[in-house]
Amino acid sequence: MVMLQGEVPLDARRFQVDFQCGCSLHPRPDIAIHFNPRFHTTKPHVICNTLHHGLWQTEARWPRLALQRGGGFLILFLFGNEEMKVSVNGQHFLHFRYRLPLSRVDTLGIFGDIVVQAVGFLNINPFSEGSSEYPVGHPFLPGSPGLEVPCSHPLPQGLWPGQVIVLRGLVLPEPKDFTLRLLDEAARAPVTLRASFADRTLAWVSPWGQKRLISAPFLFYPQRFFEVLLLCQEGGLKLALNGQALGATVLGQQALERLRELRVSGSVQLYCVHH
Image (cartoon, rainbow, N blue to C red; front, side, top):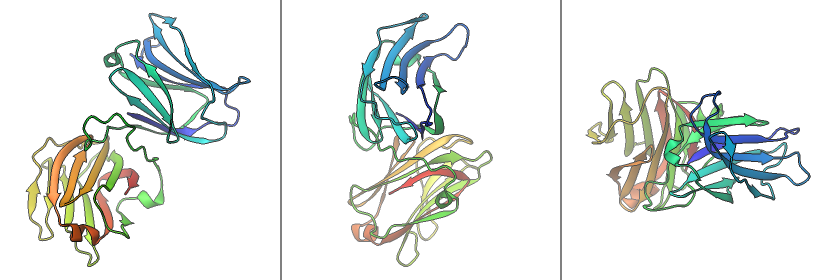
C-alpha cells in the first residue's frame, strides 16, 4: 500500500499520481497506473489510465470527486493481485484493473497542483492472513511536538486483546539504538523492545535487564522508513516490523491491563504513533 497525505490548493486545476515503469524523461516511460483528479471542469472527476509505448489506453472515469479544493486528504492506494483499490479520507473510492504487470513499476511520480505532506509505503496487516481490506492508514504528523523523541504517550485504559500499537517513522543517518517501552502503574517496564545498531540485533528486554534475542533479519536501516506493530492478544503481544511478523512476548492479561504508558527513545524520527 502507498499512502499519500497532503492538501489541495484553493486554485487547483488538476494533479496526478503515476506508478511508472522507469523514471526517464525522454523517452517517456510506460505508466502502469495514472491517477488524475481534475477540479477545473464543471463536474470534477478522477481519470485512471495506462500509458503504453507512448500511447494512452482507454480512460476510466469516476464522478463525484471525493477531494475538495482547499481541503486536506489521506489517499490509500492498495495493490491486490489483479487490481488497485483507492480510498480517500477513509472511504473506498474506486478500483482499477492492471493493464501492465505491476512488477514493472519502480517509480512513483507526483505532479500538478498538490501540496504533499507525506508519502508512506506500508504493508498489509501481517496478523490477518489473506486480508484484502485497507490497512490502517493513520495520518503522518511531521514536526508534531508530541512525536519529538524521546516521547511518552499515555495508555489510560491499558491494553486489551485486539488492540494494535502502530509506530511509523524514519531511522536517523547515524543510528545507535531504538527502544520502545510499555510501563505499568508503578513505572516498571514489563515490555521493552530494543534495537541495537552496533551489533544489528533486536531483543525483548525483561524488567531485570535480561535480553531475549529475536531471531529474525535486522530490518532497521539508516535513513529508511520503518513500521512497528504490536498486537495485543490474550497472553501477550505479537510483534511485526515492516510487515513481517517476528514472534511474540508473553504477558498475562492483568499485566496488560495495568500498562499505562508508551515510551519511545533512540535514533529515530517519528511520524505516527497510534494505539
